Figure (cartoon, rainbow, N blue to C red):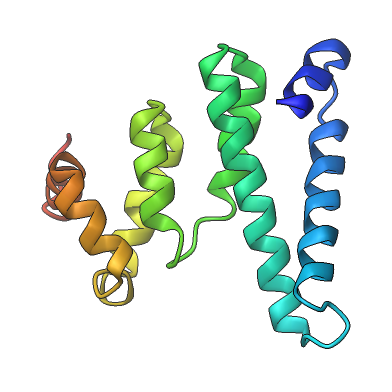
Length: 144
């Protein structure tokens, strides 16, 4: 919320990026950054960045800060991966973020063997059957 307020007053994304960096550093130091290998540090920073962006995206959508929402959506599109595609797809669906939704659905379609066996995919399909329908339609080449 603080990052969104700073953005509103300054119209500058650097406050959001600073918050992401601070969260990443805190996360890395909490997991024992110096003892962890580079892969663990990178994963922790990615997860932290993702969670910060998702929170700011939700708040900016709630308060209809369209420029910040669009920026968050674009940043989240770059972070779509097998482990996060389902949670990002749910958020995109809830916030009517069409670009993020399409990126997530394409990622799931292209990596279906890996994503479909995850507990996140099972949870998403049981709680959000309309997303499974959209994925199915996309797989058959039909428009949703």
